Amino acid sequence: MNKKINKLHQLLIDNLIMDLNDVDKCTPGLYQVVRGVLTDNKELLDSIPQDTLDFLEDKLTDSLPFKKDVG
Image (cartoon, rainbow, N blue to C red):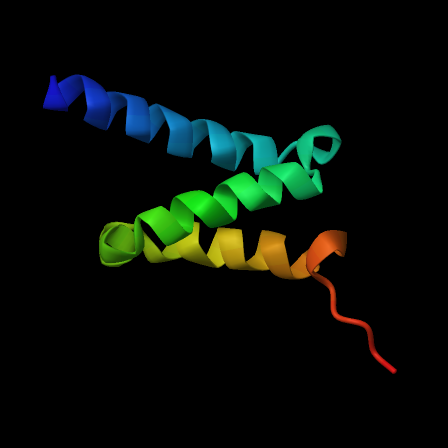
């Protein structure tokens, strides 16, 4: 059973990353889901490849829902 859960988890992560590459799917709701997955898996962040973390950081930083007001 654990093997199926791991596969499902990896599929979820892969699809979230693909959705972040799709301009039509980049909504505040998607970012909340990504944030939730990252929060729920803090202990696993060290096992996530650095290029994936950099990609996520760039996406979240450059996205409108996360931009800070300047002024």
